[in-house]
Length: 410
Ligand SMILES: Cc1ncc(COP(=O)(O)O)c(C=O)c1O
Image 1 (cartoon, rainbow, N blue to C red):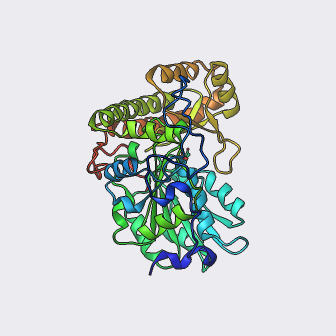
Image 2: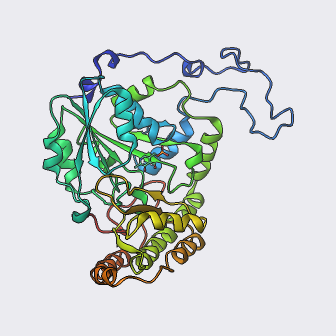
Image 3: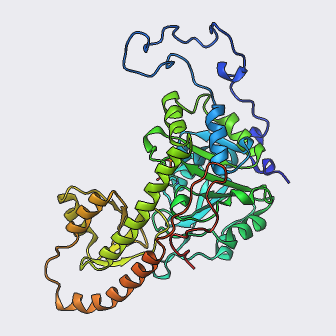
């Protein structure tokens, strides 16, 4: 059964705004879009050529390249302003305000809850335990669903915990949600995990949607380019309800450059390798810091770290000119800061700032004796995972299971 039957009924046959560029006609003289006929670039202004024209709603060259990179049929790909836009549009497409609900993990990426709230959809979250390394039980997640559940969102690697859930549970969940809800697998950080994408499951399950982004590993957060990968009817629906021109021309150019050829991808590949080594190094060093209680294993480009005093650590880092993300006020994440893995010199500065604590008290020393043991286990696991890094390839996407960067959470 197509998942279109679960879309808001009034949208199933929704007709997209007939924008000028959607018509598909090409002509030498374009007088169809109320654009300015003069190109500022030709005036000598320091801007890209062609910005006087509206862009293609879904540029074919970028679509073709990303389809190749992700190893999917281009008809299953919709490109938008970051995966944020895809999340927003999925919620808008499926959820009836005041009636439908969305199920996700907690903690996870905050935009799912915000998007659900904006759409008037109920947000149901399965609380994961830090003590259990944020393990999740698919049956408990399913138990939160009912006849009005439209989306179930699994972020893997999960932000902000770094936990990886790419295993048999994804397909099992899709099978159990068949005909009822769309399983959205957010793979914003998958390139750092070295596991196969859930896109391979879309052939077998019409209710899986995968989110990818150029914001992380491809170093284009400022360009705002992300992808939704799903069965053609879903990708097509999202295209119909989206803004007429979701992708600004300069962003398209930047994205094309980032995934243009093997040279560009090899550069990205090298950066992944460096970040994985740095992730293990930073995790190791933080685990040994007297300020730190725990460093969780991470399959992303960040580490969730519990500090003895998160407020103090945050202030100490800020004093050193380093901004990290404070999650300590979030339920279940007491004492936790999320630290993005930076360049080696940035990580050195972070570790320097964490290396000079005031003398520990007798009681905290006792506490730390146990903590040290945990820390070194984490670092052993992370260090063990360093090589080889996951491989990028234009034709095959990311090699499944190769170069596993961190152990999945149980
Ligand atoms: C899990 C996750 N999904 C999606 C996004 C949004 O990414 P984009 O920049 O593609 O909108 C983020 C951003 O941090 C994220 O952490």
